[in-house]
Length: 244
Image 1 (cartoon, helix red, strand yellow):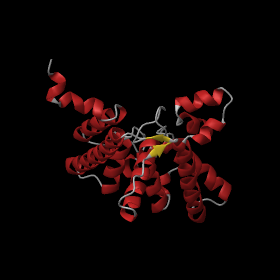
Image 2 (cartoon, rainbow, N blue to C red):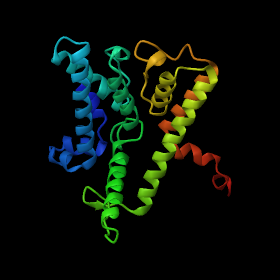
Image 3 (cartoon, helix red, strand yellow):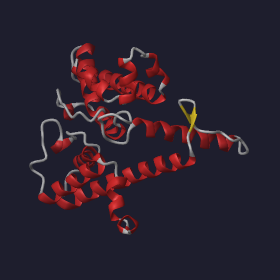
Image 4 (spheres, one colour):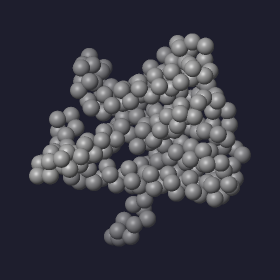
């Protein structure tokens, strides 16, 4: 039940509105929702199969734990029902990947958001098509609507800036108190995405209390940047913002 409601909370409020109006068909017409659903299902089943082979005695139990944990992290809810630090490495890496994806735009979730990932995939497909057909004009469409070049530029810039801030946060955490690499990576990712638990020392059975004051300040800044989606905070440091 909790897994279902966490998944619903990761959906766009616009989609929830259509759902309450008795028009569930609108959901599948949304390319972002299709990606959100399929991406989560694929990761859930991969993790379930892997932990079934190594930890849990039945597939249903493995599916229950994997679905809860994947949805909890992808929607940045932050609930934990299993010590996934004991799960196989690939499962942990998939959970780390979900910390970046987040939920749908216009939802309560954090991180990059699925719509930006959809746009990036479509942009990548467009570039590959141009390599094959150099003279072709291939517009990028989402839900049958063309995406303006300004929007493409904004999405690309945001994603690059997100990765840059994530890497910078990881470097500061490793430099500040020599954290293990996986702990620093997951701490930076979970703070920037406002997820909650990470991996290693800040994983499901750990917390951030043992970190130094410097690391806590770095993580606090990352949480602020992530929650306000980077540009809102960074624009404060531009000279143009302070001009009359």
